[in-house]
Image 1 (cartoon, rainbow, N blue to C red):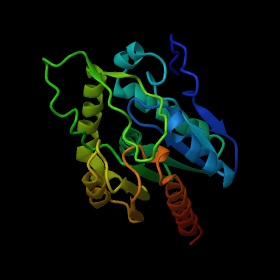
Image 2 (image 1 turned 30 degrees about the vertical axis):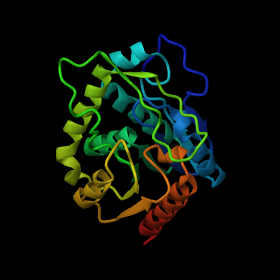
Image 3 (image 1 turned 135 degrees about the vertical axis):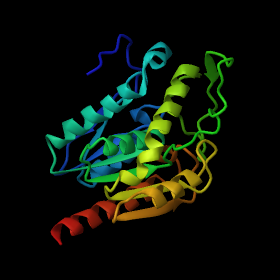
Length: 252
């Protein structure tokens, strides 16, 4: 496990909520922290699930640590989160927001035996980063979080290291060609309007997945950071319905 040399920003810590035999691993997105999935996580816990939201390496500390991290570090953070839940739970579902979804898909390709995958605005392309060349600045100004609801705060770095953005693109490039090898049961959630990741990413993902149990649902009232937006309750309801379908499948 990585030891950070920088203090974790208050509120950005990983969190674990003990519950029943079904575990849900919540993976935040690029330049985000577990804070962005905390409300959803607490709601899952209120429904009896065991919840763990790891803090991806380099996130929620200092931009210099973010710059030094690579996507293998981020995958390792998720892998360790899976191991923690798998040791405590009979079933482990991974739910990833944006890059968190990309990481979940990448690990499923590598054989991590998730019982189900929930993707929320999965990042399979990021148009804002696609044109980064060798002559771009070392740091990019971070825009305000793409959230439709008003008065919502998300913990992010003010600037994004170009090196980190390129690592995100490299992760996507590695993961995209092998999506059709993923046959894990999947719930694909996407916002009707998303200014960071085109909604077509999720529709394409749904078509490519080899899962026999797969469903695709639109979040009508949220932008990109849907776990902090107006459709939080819908995310929970659709996920609980999906988990119920997995239980019925196992019982059948």
